[in-house]
Amino acid sequence: MSNPIMNEPDPQLEKWMHKGAKKDQRVDHFFRRTLHFMERAIAVIALVGLAAELGFECYRMFTQAGYWGDINHLLHNLLGIVVGMEFVRMLIETTPANIIEVLVLAITRHVVLSHEDPLTNLVSIVCIAGLFAIRRFLIRPNELWEDMVDEE
Image 1 (spheres, rainbow, N blue to C red):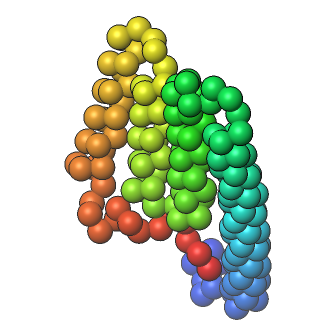
Image 2 (image 1 turned 180 degrees about the horizontal axis):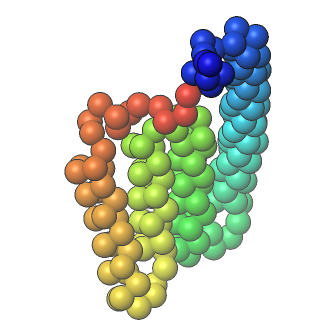
């Protein structure tokens, strides 16, 4: 008496499984493309907002009395725009190098603009050093500029 489990695979079952796998691949592809499109749309919206903010900032520089007297305000606004532009770049090109750059810029902006206690500044500097160590020792050079998101 032969064991039905040990017999040759059923061709209909194989065909049904292959058909299901192809359907799953199409659904995965659809979701990846949709998410990729949404990331691009968010990047475009953020870029338009950043361009508008930069334009308003340039306008205020020359029309607002006493604008140049408060350098902290100027640095706050301009560094916010720079971090935003790096964020848009990270959305468009998702590489380990871009992600680390955005994090370094955001932490650096915090250190430059916040005048908090020395311990907070020390922790921020240690975070930046940690990011550089991650870049140097944990990410291989050939992976540094390699896109982390599959584009299909």
